[in-house]
Length: 398
Ligand code: FAD
Ligand code: UDP
Image 1 (cartoon, protein in one colour):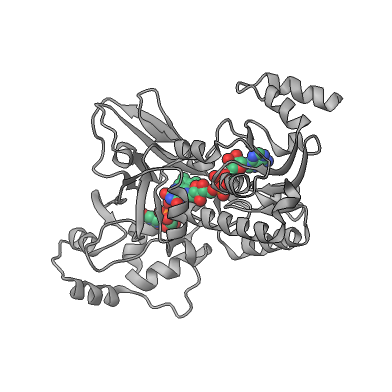
Image 2 (cartoon, rainbow, N blue to C red):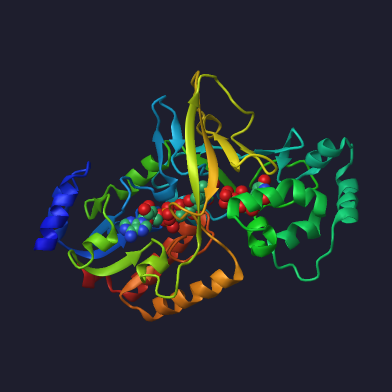
């Protein structure tokens, strides 16, 4: 009780009246406690409540739902993404259909330019990138031969350097990838798994879209609105500004789903898994437009990696415009698992622990230490739900 009182006093200092919610949570008994209200936690809360009638308590230590996809209106009335630009794209009809239950969509194809040699050039590297950078007029067939003449074949492509050098050669690698990757990850591309830079293809046609997926849309009312609809269910209770560690053992629940960092859950017993962080600088300018596309990457200069102008994503009309600068950092909230062999090894230890631990299920980008996009996390959450639903009879939870 002393603990509980201290907790209540702490909670009363907070802004979202969690003290009242804590009262509800303490009295009630939940079928599920879900830690983290991002895509992983929210999709599972929604499925468990709506498909099985299970009672869910969803908590997040932040003061909002939607995890890293959280967006909000700033003081200029412009919708911005608090944790950097989130562009929805997927090839999965299943994921698209699922999210379509909670939002309408705005068609949007993402385009990015990179500032290289004082020019703004399409990235992924395509035919126009090369023609404009070198003042050439090559055709698609010619540029393929041009690239082959520069590529440095790597027998065993392992690293993020190998993957690019093997395809486009060292010069383009240094201009577009080396500096950006060093900034973003704090290590040289030669020390990162190939999967990181392999996310960005090289094209010999003039397609300048960042993604090639079948479905490319933004949620029409924004991500937070979509999450609000997802979580608007009488069987789901939400407690914000609530860390799992604070309430562990104080709330009654039958099963646990955890979507935060897995190493933290196990008190770092095998050591810390590295997660890369970012510092976001949000600002509004008194001009209608600042840049020609939503995102400009800066692979060669500056401490920031990219600048986002949100009106391109949202279609909002305003005489002002809001931007975000991203400064990579080792300290701060964990945003990116760092794909390197030694980190994969360390994660495997936690994964083995988790596999033997029947008291909790881990889902999501931080909990499964995978560099997943939003659609992949939704796919993972839906698959987890199907497994749960097959394993636990629906009636046992009522
Ligand atoms: P998160 O969204 O991180 O949610 C986990 C939640 O758990 C967090 O809200 C956290 O506060 C909470 N939590 C953690 N520990 C605790 C605890 N102890 N107690 C209580 N709560 C806790 N994907 C795309 O598809 N397209 C993009 O354009 C894109 N852009 C991105 C840009 C950036 C800068 C970043 C960082 C990611 C981007 N992503 C993008 C990836 C996307 O953000 C993730 O795939 C997705 O948000 C992961 O969802 P999640 O639920 O696994 O994790
Ligand atoms: N990358 C790069 N230059 C670019 C764009 C990407 O070097 O102009 C590399 C960098 O290592 C980055 C990775 O490719 O982290 C993946 O890029 P993506 O745009 O998918 O990163 P995210 O949106 O996940 O931050």
